[in-house]
Image (cartoon, rainbow, N blue to C red):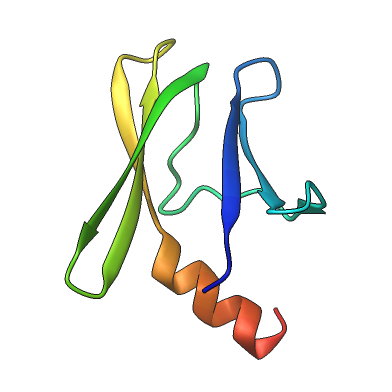
Length: 79
């Protein structure tokens, strides 16, 4: 299992990703034309084999979701 650390950056409106050693990985890309707006609180929810990251956008008053399993599959394929 690959361990990752997710960091919300409200200044750049990104979710930064680091491995367990602190090495930066590609930031999470927003899907479906969604846009982060001052992301703050985050929660990872696991249901069965699916892992999703929920991000609160305090600037826009909405929640964005990221499918973390899709990111893992892309990493395996070298994307």
